[in-house]
Image 1 (cartoon, rainbow, N blue to C red):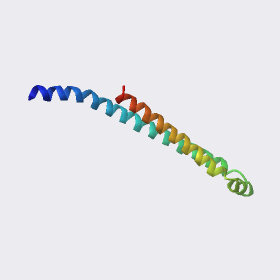
Image 2: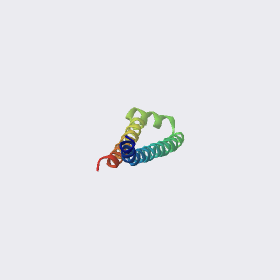
Image 3: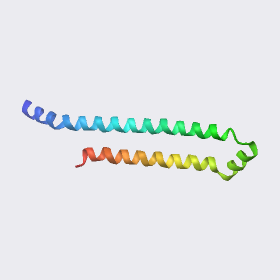
Image 4: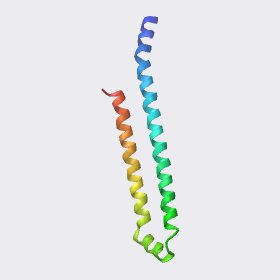
Length: 93
């Protein structure tokens, strides 16, 4: 029975290592994108604070701020999908 257990462990070991690497890369990517988007939103907020209130209201009525949120959400979703696709390639060869 120990031969069978050793054989199973030799099969599961590399798979476990690949799973941990894929998880680590995915988490690192999501955290990095989140930090970049937080900084981008901060820059946009700082830039908008310098314009007159009437112009800010017109931009808000036009949906510019919602549009920026949609674009950032779409880019974030695309990064997550690419990360999942890359992680899937580790397991399905």
